[in-house]
Each structure stands twice: as structure tokens, then as C-alpha cells.
Length: 623
Image (cartoon, rainbow, N blue to C red; front, side):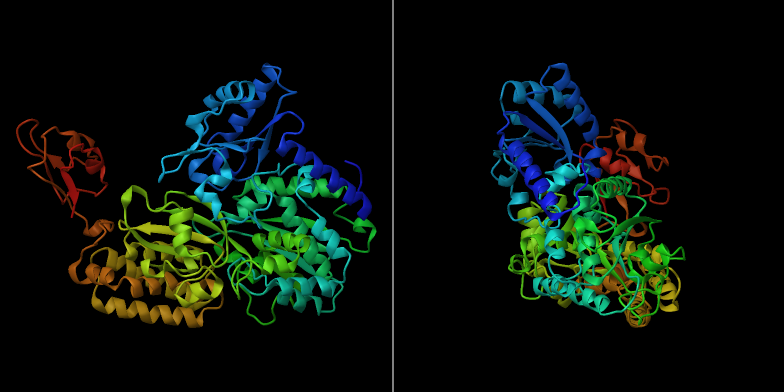
């Protein structure tokens, strides 16, 4: 691609690329355009092999003038992938296998017939749904941060231009730095990394500092269990995030930006590198961008996967080559950040929203959401829910809509029990909270938080004491150890939870847990320790009877905690077939085939559950 050195050149390029994309999507060129999901989840389910096979078949059958194949970003509907979408029909095929490629080419591309068995089936109506936008999972979503994902090839700059890339930067460079900051303030955008601090205010602090060097840092160190929002954005539209970083750089007077991305995201990192290289080649990264005095360069730093490096000052230390441990504040990074220079740290989703705001306008963004929480929020919806995936909804959407309308409810007719929002720093919300609007303040008022967007749904089979223990194990592993309240407090809380789930708990342990939670919360140096006890506090408040059952009766109501679990065979249901005994790894089951019911020796049983899963007659139960 030729160098782009002026606004006029860029505008012409954007117009040309937009026209090309519109032609493809509308079928004006007379071709069918197949797009294949290239997100990590679908790649792990052979989407690359599907794409390669489609390309081979098009070539073999001489269909180059009738069809094209393209890789795009995440479709979001992870539980239904891999996906192949066909334009201009806007037809979505789900759960596609490599063996389906030939059918897609023959029946759809050549014969023009829809392949019915590859369509999504609505679980309520049992009707097959052909178009993506007609599926309930997508109906209540609005893509702002996910703009372009599942539509454009993230490794082709022309397609990003076709979807509006760099219109926001063009606008930013046409106004003053203060006017860009004012636009962010007007939009009401708050940081999507967890804290929810107003983006415009953070930028204002950095703009007001006098310094030869300033820095913009993109926090892509996504560490919450089950979270994949930032990864999917970087995989699906890295150019949009780069543009947001450049707008931030212009606004505060920075010439360099650093992407801090965890090394476990190789696809996201590779696509980011490709995008940076392409932008450098066309002159949109480097010196005197678009003929202005604005110069900017992007750099990538890989994180080693430390959860604490999601905390902004620990992240700064890591970029500088130091151990990832938080710094005392003040001074805040906007005053003294990277290499003691004024710096702003924004989350991936925040910067993706910045480019949208500058392109579409602050008023349009502020019109979405609630009074104090504007715009949309991306959630990684997982756990015990039918529609697992990536969801972007307007602020103010209720938890009920998220779980039951978009998420499709709880599998296997089970009863909803709780949803953990905000990851290890958040809390569990229950049935009484289902009609709460999702925004920064409402979730905090209910004892949880928005966090970066993890949302784990739990059903009646989940033990809430075990859930609290799981998150505390994670926090203990990830604590940097710098401050005693976090280093020691989280370890003591884990020891108490382990004691309780092992059937050795006492009532005093519950009082000790509450006291330790408060001490750790009020005395820890950074947010990791300050929020570490949230899962314990919220589960003790919402499910006191479960904690008491573990302590008073030494029973786990959900039959999850192994130390208090016992498997029994009902002699009246036992068919004396020996299938359970043959699958027991420790020979804890005895009986006589065809003559005597089988029994389980509790002293030998390791509670693996293989006997129960292999019994075809429902004769084995957990007590």
C-alpha cells in the first residue's frame, strides 16, 4: 500500500475501502463471500483447517470468480462455534466441521441452497434461524468495543479502513488536545479495566503535566479466570485499539505507546504486530502523521501472566524490567508513571471505545447506558449457562436479560443459584439481584463489581464455600507478597476455607473469616488485596446456611466438597452388573455379579465419581 501523508489521501483510502466492503457484504460483485471465525476458541476447534479446506475446494472447482474466503475475528457465540458466515445472504452456519466444507461449497455456493442442519436452532421455539441478527443471543447486543470483530480480517489494514478505522484520529487531529479530552469527558466513558475511573479526567491530569516525555499504556494483561474480552478485541480488530491509543497520545502529548499483553495470547500479539507493521509502512505510525506535528510509535511488551500486573503500577514496574509489584500512591501514574514520566494506563476495551467515540461523537455514546455509566460493556459469559460467549450490552441491561435472554438460561433445567461478576475481585449475586441494572455503581451497592467483565454463572450444583475457596486459592497464588495484609491475610483465609471444606470447621472459623476479610480489605497496598475477600464476604452474606451446614453438620449441601462426600449404592436399584466395580480405580466396590448388590467401601473410596457416571440405572447417589 502506498504511503498516506495527508488527510485527503486517508479520506480517499477510507472511502475506497468502505465501498469495497459494502460491495462484498451486499453482493454487488456477484460473488459469495465466506468468512470463517478466527478467534482462539474456534481456532482450537479446527476453524483454520475449515478455512484451508474451503480455499482448496474453491480452487479445485474453479470458483475463484464466484466465491472468496476470509478469516475474521470472534463471533462471540463461543458455545456454538466454529462459524462460517456467508454474504450477501448474511447466512450463519454454526458447529461447522472440516467435513462440512464440501457441502458448503457444493450446496450453498454452487447450488444456492441453505444447509438446514448447520443452522442454529432456537431452544424455545425449536425453529431454525438463518440470519445472525435473528438469534436471541445477538438481539440485545450493541457492538462498540467489538466494532468490526466477526466482519473484517484483522490482518488486512484495508478492511479496517473499510470499517471506519482512523476517522476518529482524523477528527482528533483537527481539534485541540483539550477539545479531545473534553470529548472524552462529555462521553462519560469510564475505564473498562475494573476501576471505572472517568477516562477524560485521567487524560486531563496527564495533559496538565509539563514534561518532554509522556506515555500511553494499553493494559492487555487480562488475568481473571474465565475472562477473554481483551483477547478477543485484539484478535478481532487490533487497528481499532491502536487508533484509540494514538488518540490518547495526541490528547496528552505522548509520542510513545506500550501494549502490555500477556504472553498466553499469541494470536492477539501476532495480529497486533502485523497491524503495527502495516501502519508503520503506510506512515500512520511514525513521524509527522498525516502531515501534522503529531508523531507516535507503538511498542509491545509481553507479560508473564501475573494477575497482579493488571494493577497499573505493578504493570509499569514490569514494563521497566522490574518485578511486577505495586507502587504506593500518590504519586499517581498520570503524574509520575513509566520511567517517572506522566503516563496514562487504559484497558483494551477502553481504547477500542475511544476510537468509536471520536468517530461517532460523544453525544451518541452518552445516549447509551445509564446516568452514571455510559456506553456498553463487554462480558465473557461462562459457567452454567447455555449460551457461553462474548457479549457486549448497553449499560443498564439487567442480569436477568444477560443470563436468560442472551445467555439462554441454565442448562439441563437446573435452577439458577448465583453469578460471580468482577472475577476474583468481585462477588456473588443471587436470584434477588437478577433485575439489577448492570452498571458500575449498582453492582458495587450489591456487594460485587463490574470488574473487567468476567461473568460466571452457577447453578444449584455449585457449592458456594467451594467457590470462595477457588477464588482465594487463585488470589494466594497471584499475590505479589509485597504487603503483609495481603500476603498473610489471604493465606490464613484460604487455610480456614480449606479446614471448613474438609469437614473440620468450627463456628469460630466463620468469625475469624469475617475479621480477616475486613483486615485484609482495609490494610492491603493495592486493589488485589483490597478486594481479595469479596467472594468470601458476598457468599457468607448470601448463603450463610451453606457455611453453617459445612461447620455444624459437616455436610456439603451441593455434594461438592469431597471430604464430606459419600457415594452409596441403592441395593433395590442395583442390577448386579459390576459395571461400577470394573470402573473403580481403587477397587473400593465389591459384590457378586448377578447374585449380590454391590457396595462401596467408604474408607477406600476416593470420591472420583466414576462409579456414578458409569451406572446406567441411577443406582448410585451422593450423600
